[in-house]
Length: 630
Image (cartoon, rainbow, N blue to C red; front, side):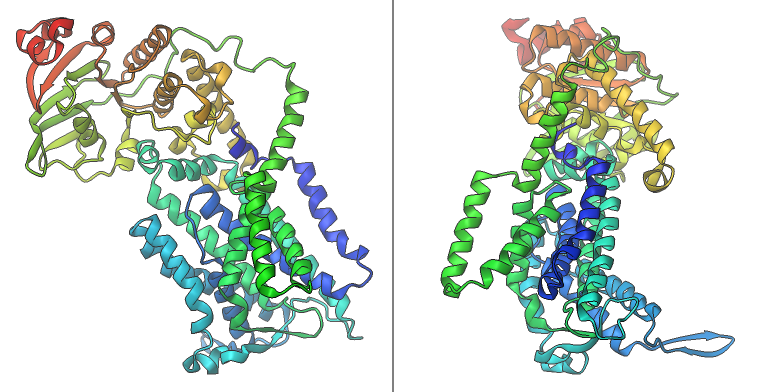
């Protein structure tokens, strides 16, 4: 397991101990009401940061809108608590006016959360369509505009203007009749910690699953993710949904838990300014992005540090400068944040205990040619009269070819002849000006790259495109994303079925890694692999998706002789399973060794097609591509 997902797999015992310690901690404070109130805020910050971590840490969507969504949830819940009138018609007229009940409080928090999250999604989703830079700029605008908008005079009747909203009830179930506000604050703290713990558990299961790998693959390379059947759009929308819900829920609870000194709380726009957005960003960096414990550690570290530091007698401007320098120094000294440092410590402890154990797949999994499951009957791949122009240049001039099931078809030609462009057309990354692609007999013209991957088309790239922060095994498992059938029920309810499914796919991944000679590197992050190892890893990742059609873009380039032998075994295994393989390659010895047919391109036109030996001996081919090397 890579460091990234290993940091998402916290020991259950450690989690329970941390929750228990958090619940018991206020009992040691000697009725320190101010510190209890601060701990409530820290817990709510942690909840918001859990969502920000999914969006920014795992999916790479840098956002400064956390404070604005947090504030939207707070104001929505506060308004609902103060003014809710729900009218329902059941036969006759039934008016439900929530009173001082727990139900009213729950209604306000839940609906306030949905409204706050909806505001966040309404503003951020359109920006996401314009790209990550536009998304970040819109999030910055939200952070700047929110405290200005909520104090406008036109909204003063609803949002309270500059004074904000008062008379918001505290988040308590049983109110102390003696006016013991410290006991009430501890009750609020307990409720908030339980909510944060539940959110932590939900995200823990999600991020340790195939969805965690999907988030990271989209963050590292959206094109590569789409080629594996992972939809970048859906993945980012899910990530933003989680982010908005966590931030809005934290804000909704904050509206009812801001102060432990009275029966009521208050919400004002000045609290949700740009400094709060920067605090959330800094806390995640300090805690550690893409680590599940990072948001909690960052909230505790900066939340409590801010309390002490802001109460110092230093000049406010000097205080900000010192804080900024301390933050920069921390990032330089601890680049992975507190969560990263904790993860490295746990990893060393775990490795020390398991160093003497043999790797579970070392004995018995390494086969010369893995036995891949037989692909069901299909019609392979057909390209008809594909025409592609870039400006005034014709990259492909009405090119046609067919790749039959159980055959390896080589597509060769000089650099710039249009081979990779052809693969991009076939995989859905480039739309042709003319012609059509038939995938298993179906016209794939309206299919996206993700849809084609889910239909059974997989590919590799001219330059290996792998998720560098995932281990070799996790990269392969990412290729099996849509083979997980247990869905959300399996993730949270049908846990046994889910574990069996995951174990089976991990065994398949280990067999493929063994066949590629990558077993010793299975748990190494992809960024540490050599160029040749990454190429083989891409092929393994494509094969675990049980492809009907496999597109290989120069897979032998840069490989050592022994790696080429392993690659040849994988290609033959794909062919023997019934897969239609289209191979783009410059290594003609490799082409001759594994191909059943060959097509030669020259300046976007087909100049020869047929048996590889015959085609590669064609004088026109020798002149245009092979030359003296033939």
